Image 1: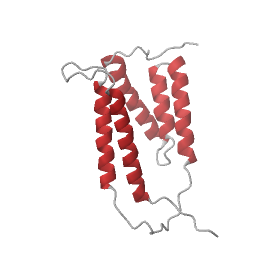
Image 2: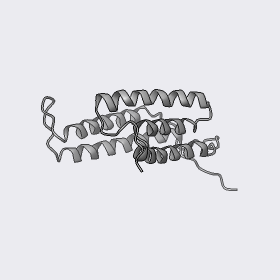
Image 3: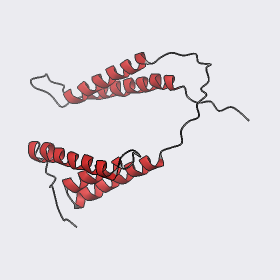
Image 4: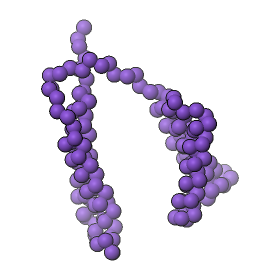
Amino acid sequence: MKARRFINPYNRDYYGGALMLLVGLGVVTQGLSYDVGSLSHMGPGFFPVSLGVILSLVGVGIAFGARRIDSDAKLEEEPLPPEWRGWICIVLSVIAFVILGRYGGLLPASFAIVFISALGDRQNTLLSAMVLAFSVCVICVVVFWWALQLQLPLFTWAS
């Protein structure tokens, strides 16, 4: 039987850092096509350029922080099976957010996305998922509805 070769987890840091660096540089390049402005008078390109620079710096930090090991070293660990419960809960929570955001409002949508995705973690209980979802709903009301005055209603019964 042929031995399976796995990606070295230490090399993943190099690849991930390089990918973040490339995406960050792409964002900076695209953001520079807009007016960047200054700190006191920000243009439309200021935010993308800033985020691109931060993303690039994080990518460089991840790549430099990766440990080097011998490329011929083989990993003895078998990969873990996929976490289907987590994947299914995350996908269902996004679908619930879209549907409830359209027909139910900000609070039901926020509660649903957090509650359903929290159930994807095997260590969460129903009570801890509900407490987490309720806490996020309170934060959503304060930040999005009150402070930012987002035009999404808290509750709606649209059809």
